Image (cartoon, rainbow, N blue to C red; front, side, top):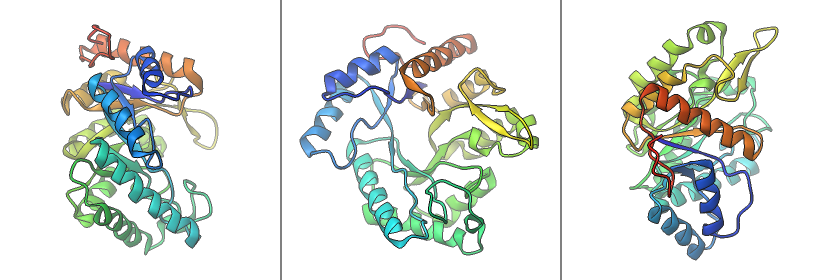
Length: 286
């Protein structure tokens, strides 16, 4: 298994970026540049990653290609295609986005997210993005969300079937699927189901925690180790997918929070007997 996360400090060169990746103990990284970077710069960062045994696990394409604003929708589609092309150039595990929100904000809940024709629009949009790029070294994946499709294991399996493209895969964020008290109470069973049925398609995993926090049934994301998620289970199941499967910490505030989360994950991995590919220059196995 590989551990990764965000680098929450600015950098201007591959050497500066690498120093921070080492300090955080990552062996997997999000793409350090976006599609707008000059070709020379993209290749410099790629060479740095390869020379230091860093896996580029994700290229983000965060936007709403389902936006009801046609200008925003067109811009999002263009962004997704450009970022997927970048992921293919870098040989990243996946290019990840959400399906998109049917309203003005890119990631919010709207009743139209569950309108009858939204599912068809998602299928057509994912196909359009993949068919425009025709990736051969990466995959396009959707992060599940609690208030838009896919919001369940069954829903993701249906999309895999209906999109019907070899380059469409799974980015697993199990916490985003915990959108009811029943799922919260049975979080370990939900996580096991995610890996059991989506496992062959998973290209990247987010490591997050959740806690029940107030009425009416407010389930809040919280840093790893401060909620109810069984991280020993998550780590064992992630490792079972293959030694290069990336597990990313995210949605934390500042450098110290990412450093502490990475330390927690490594400690849990050691406790669970799960080897973690060491960071560049680090001989430790966890």
